[in-house]
Length: 157
Image 1 (cartoon, rainbow, N blue to C red):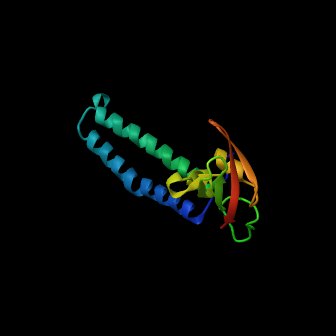
Image 2 (cartoon, rainbow, N blue to C red):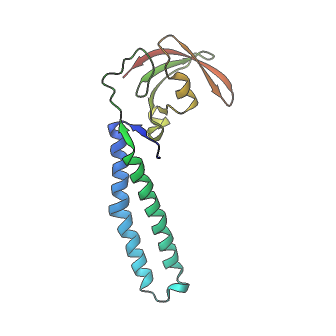
């Protein structure tokens, strides 16, 4: 059985757009490459044909995987999640106890994580450590460099 993943509407749309691009742009392009290579003669010694067929196989595998991910995707309804604890889609302001640095993160599904946009996965060490915590709690986060302590300063949507 395939794993169910949870997405925001934007995250799910991004996956659907990727699938559409693979099907409508990349698939025809590879088909054209195969046709051009086939026109060049003997297929048994045609490296272009072999490369195009391999690219086609990889593309079809990507399409199949993406279709499976989309079919098992579930949208997150955050309309009735309270802000008293950290959950997926929570915007959390945390303070590093050791150096006093404050940072804001939004907890998202693993496939939507983007550190540049300050979106961290609920599967990451920090995400796991923050889940279920309330404002004022201290989260002990296990990292490769040791245990870090973060205070939850604020939670919002």
